[in-house]
Length: 428
Image 1: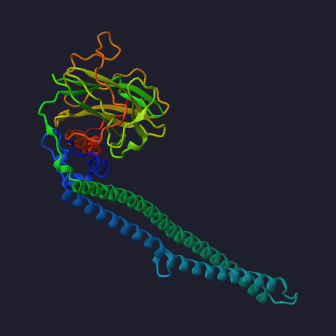
Image 2 (image 1 turned 180 degrees about the vertical axis):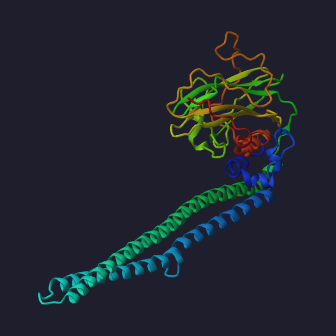
């Protein structure tokens, strides 16, 4: 008997389009999710999310088209700003012609005065001098008019250019909105297609029988509260079977989410979480369903320590991060279970080149499991693991508990730092 593969649809859509899924499935955003009662989005709900994503994409395309039309209109003959430029240039041309004519009148008046005959009367000489003075005054006035007209041309051209720059900027913003809307639409469509595929395969009829209190705990040690961009840190994930029965297959879960300091812009593409199987020195990236290879089996009271690694890209801005861990299990008899709550370990992201100094280890942000009998792997009383990470890769079956843990947090992670982001003033 297998378990429905929840994360193949819900997490993929939720991480990319949290607002859409939250709008149709508000139960996913509950602050305290219950492991056994939440259900994955129905096909009808995913259809609503896909339809909403389509509308958002269509609106974004229309907005981008409208922004382009604004820029085109600014260069048309009927645009007021363009017409103002044309009119200002025409006025400046007229002013230039008037100044040229006034300057020539000065030249002519001067020549007339200079060529007066010696026999000219005093009245004729006075008239010539007056004509020159008047011509010079008219030329000065024409010069001032031309300067003012030229300034109006510059003013009109600046206004037109500013409008074109604003229109171009609006196009760029519209293009980004269209790109995001397309990504949201693609994710929603893929989630719906996967859900329909699962329905066709009849996976809904192959659910396991959940166990109410599995006492499967996952605890992180060694993850610092501040991680510098451009570095990587190693830490430990302990998965423990707190029951008195063997768990036939345990699937460790890990999901890292990060934002900039505002808490509004996600930078998940700049963070990566990896794990190392068994005693191997190789590192494997957690799969796109946020699971690692199965531990098969994990005996009663036993634990397994999984080596983990968090890498922050050097281009990542200062911000906030959280690493969620959980575990699900499935038994050969059809029973299954997992962590009732995800453990979220928050950390600050310091800008590349920072030197945060000595920092404490991150602590879980949700209900802490009972780990009083757990020591770190290198401690003097560390117990050897009786379960092993399967060498054949992650199992295709994942627990219904994934919805209550992994999916719920993945959906809510996009909004988490908006409502409770940490102060970043401690970056140095």
